[in-house]
Amino acid sequence: MNHFFLHHRTVRFGECDPAGVVYYPIFFNWFHECMEAWFEEALQTPYAKVIQEIGFPAKSCEANFLRPIPVGSSITLALSLLEIRQKGFCLIFNIYKEHLPHCTD
Image (cartoon, rainbow, N blue to C red):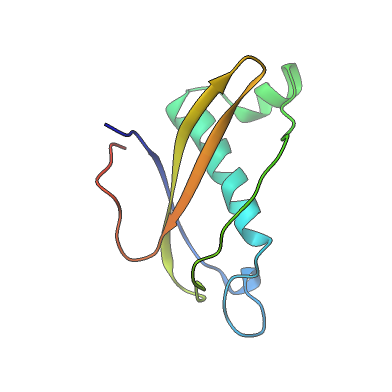
């Protein structure tokens, strides 16, 4: 069974381009926001403490954009831990606008 950490939010006007849809770099901000919430809520570890004590650089990131998300949309980011490695780990983020997968919060 897959386990997801769910982070809910609303798309704000300032996150959109002139066409009224999310400007693509914003997605990476959302991924990081979700990861910080995961550390704090699911792992019970303040993310600021992680940064101050051990640091936490990102090695790589990429995204596939399937469809636009308009301003005002209620969305859910689903974070899943794909792999734990010797010097880090790999996270997968999915964004759902209308429905969620069957998952464990």
